[in-house]
Length: 179
Image (cartoon, rainbow, N blue to C red; front, top):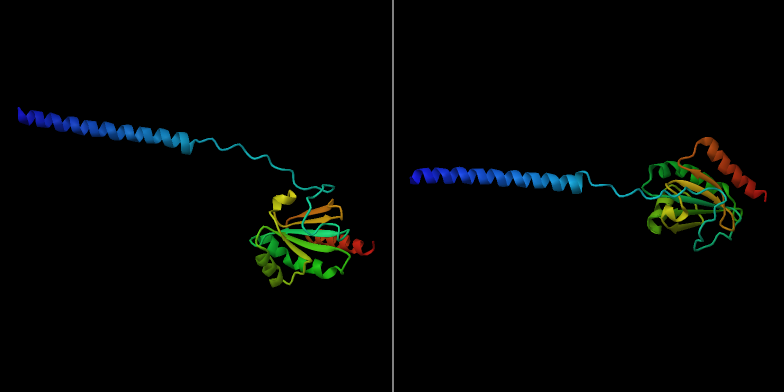
């Protein structure tokens, strides 16, 4: 009798353990599928429309009014295309004469890090500001904006520029000389 009770107890214990493990697995699956696997993703953020010509930019510390032609380079020290574009930015900086246009570089990184980044490529800028690209409603880097003294965007170039786009920027700079 003891032996049959002992055997019944073991069978009941094993059955209970199997039921507990099965229930734990089922509960784990429900929790995972509800909160992790099939969790609804947050609604997409409204994508801001990228900056367009004739848009008014927010004021910067130094102001746009120092020149009728402000070339605003929005860059990142970690951006591959920014680094690939540095030779053109060097050429742009070397092509302008004092007073005809300003070359302003905006980075989300620290100003010292940005200055070192530009100096390593010998890119001369009039000023470096620290701000996120979305401050200017720009989606990515590199982006080059031509901005007048009122903060109105006159032209926008995005990404690594092709040769014809580089020539267009240099022509705009040359046009600034004639003003």
